[in-house]
Image 1 (cartoon, rainbow, N blue to C red):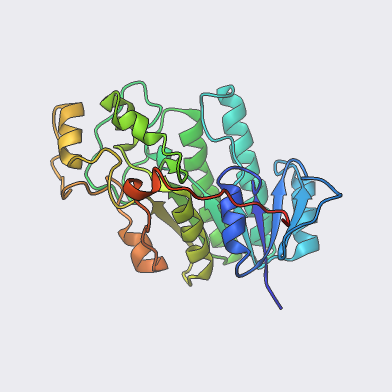
Image 2 (image 1 turned 120 degrees about the vertical axis):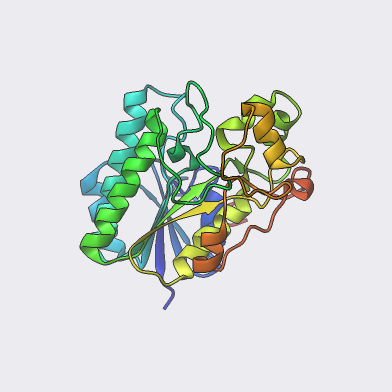
Length: 297
């Protein structure tokens, strides 16, 4: 019997790529605030539920009904600049607590969207120099914005659920997600270099995001683990250390970057998940790839 995986935020832009990828191996229940319609033909192995993931009763009811093997929590307000800060923080942490708590109590393993913004480079009034490069998942997390702080708090919830319920929880920290044929990061590369300092010019293709979620569901590990999802190189096409020095006037005392190597190390995902990024801006920026549809054609 095919196992069920619940994906919150599944109708979101990156969420639908995750649902599409996971439907290769699982029955996927795509959860979002709205349902795509009752008179529609769904794809094989994909179903839909309209649920407010900040509502504990609705979430517990859903998880109880479906008894999923795993839950992928991808629903969030993705920036501190589109809504009031209190709304961003409260929505993100309430949704994360509610979904992870229900999943853990049901014995479902969890993969959820944390963020590179947890480190505090993005959205800071003055972008701080990283403590060391490349950054690994142990780099200090010192955000000063509600979005990054909601992800730090969310990872504490993830640790609590893993301790309490004995499930595995993967906190994926994606870099700036890009889409085939629509690499907006290249606009930064050709414009103001400082505009990319908030994540040291790193990025990740959405197909690699879907791939690391699938890899985290397949892997066997205990407790809570955080993993970077980032492309292998920066999106500018110049040595990363040179970009750092040009922007900050110095590099960290510990700087072990080679060439265009990404500022975000993915060695941990390689070692524990057997995942490495496949896509580069050099091919993907102009790629002609259809966005996946979760409905029957």
